[in-house]
Amino acid sequence: MDREDIHIVVIELQQSVVVRGIKNKLQELHFKTTEVGNDMKEISRHAGKVDLFIMYLSDSIVGRAGSTNTIIEILDEVDATNQKMILIGEKDFMAEVDRKINELRKFERFLLPIDPDKLANMIEGVIEDEGDGSMKRVLIVDDDPSYAKIVRGWIGDVYQTNIVTAGMHAITFLTNHKVDLILLDYEMPVVDGPQVFEMIKSEKEMADIPIVFLTGNGNRESVQRVMKLGPAGYVLKGATKIELLTKIKNVLEKYSK
Image: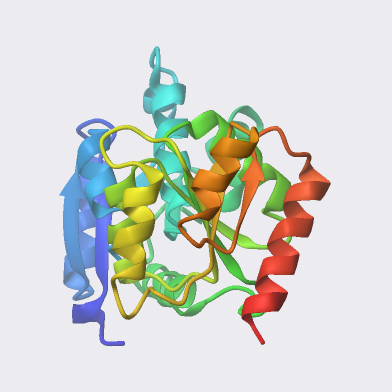
């Protein structure tokens, strides 16, 4: 991939000479670069659609009231969309921040001062690293992020796992990413599970993806209503970790034949 084709979004948590310097270096290296602030709507708009995020961390940023929560929210959004990111900061400070924010440990880091050649090599290496290609990818679609994160915690060691919290976000994600199975919340606001199901099945490129509904209601009438749509199965939201993993394993085995 040519550098001109690599799109990098630089997150500016606060106005900084360092961030402007990072952006200038990236442009000098011929990367396509976009700068955004800490607006989550703007970050979400790019998440899952660009090649890389870069975020600069300093003691003045992390030390501000409420900044840790903002950083964790950004990290969760990036992680949920399987987006790659490089964190930039001073060596001693980055080690200190790692102890405060566990979520940072999932991402690569580049230590100041900036050596353009080393930065370019890291960027190209991170982008080319596709991870463990043998792992199946599961997309969780649920408007309750707390429950979705519990599910990801249960299955994340076995499957590549992504989260979206709205039906239309699922369609957008599937347009840009290949997944092997979808866990779809049956009851969601605006665009509910059955509507998302129908939209996915109407698209030729997505129609063969097995969909397992997540439902909170296990009475006979509710289950019959869910299964009438023809999903690959359903899982009650009260299911255990073992029950969920078993269901996913069985469905993937069935649909891979």
